[in-house]
Image (cartoon, rainbow, N blue to C red; front, top):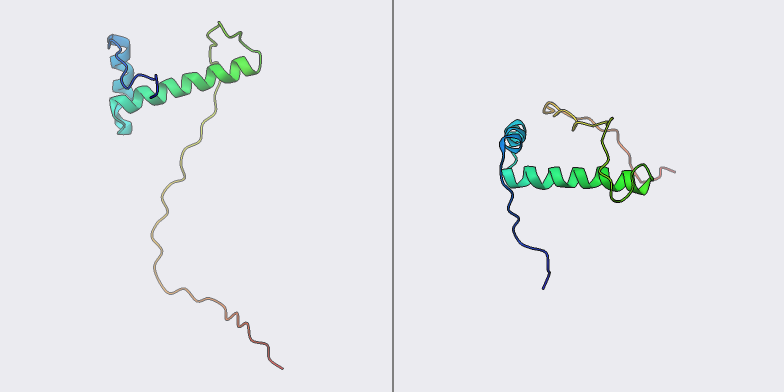
Length: 92
């Protein structure tokens, strides 16, 4: 059996409540917001330590970032699609 606890308790102070409220429009649950936030912090830490920007006992400060949004939805396609005739039979 795994030794990882199934639940984690954290006090919700004013700062955490504001951060969760900021992310509420994403539609994620509070639990998912916390999970994704911890995952992002862990990735920042790992990259900084792996690249020797920070020592393992230091908390790196993120000073720049890039992000990508998902592509916008495309309008539905309508009408007739005419494909070329790609016959595989050879004419002699």
